[in-house]
Length: 440
Image 1: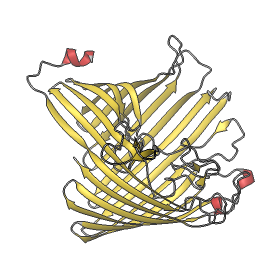
Image 2 (image 1 turned 120 degrees about the vertical axis):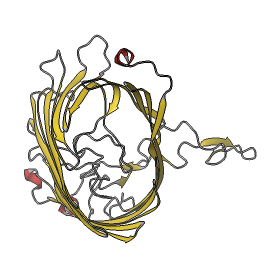
Image 3 (image 1 turned 180 degrees about the vertical axis):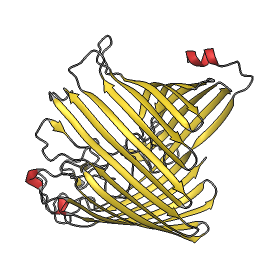
């Protein structure tokens, strides 16, 4: 804020620019449990949720701006936290979802980000709680896409500048641990540089995470190389990440070493009606989870490739005792979760424009594990997922999308038996999704 006051001139008027979207989503799954025989199988489940993301920017002057992001009922289910009404005849307390029924104070209503920017002759200074985005988003992803659910955020001071197509960036972040006067706050320093034009670009990011006065605690270095190129109707993008760390973890594990890596390559060919695309990715796994070296890399959870695989916890079972905390579900037997981890995957897709406003897509996602523990060598395949979608764009900024998918589970699930929750995870899972979006 001090930088804004020093570097900006008084403004006679402030321009307010709004960005964001509203999304309504319905989902249907049968069955995330991958089983009909397991006594805890969930069977068919469905949900309806919505999200209103508001991203206002106040352009105070030519030298200063303030930005904010507000997530209104993010991931809140329709009718969630209904108000209650006491029936005057029976005395029962009823949940209602109409008129005065739906509470306005659902958990998702929150201001998630706010930061100020000052523009100088030599660069831009940003201070505050801001989104993190780098490259294709397998390391840092701001979560602002319509199909995103999380988003990476940091309290940071950031300085960036450009000379033509060449850009540089330096930043410092802090994560408060909760003890005033104690040097236990995790901090992070980042440097990045690269080249970007309209048709090609490349960049290298280096991040160092540490605690300033705690040399025995965990420290980590992350390097990420990203690039893209466009040649006519063809676009290719590549990103690779390496993480090395050492020290003691908060979990009590000491003398831990981390050596993990992930990479993604995708290419698209766009024609007037028929288009093709393919994505290949790999995230390292750990062949010996009992040793002191951690090797598992997980893509950012907002890097989505399918409706089921690496998007839902599989298998998801009914909880033995349903409570408000667990929502009637348990993922204790899950073999994979929300995020690409310990995997090698390939996803080709074909798209065809049926009408000027209607496009169809068919995709195949196949994946296996990158590394398997010695006791689990035969359970390497996640399986195959086949997805179909139809998108309709009736007007600018308004679109609808219907998707359906089926997952044929591989040996990773079909040959697995949980000591407490049993086995039988060999049944295909089906998914359906409807999206309605208004962007601005």
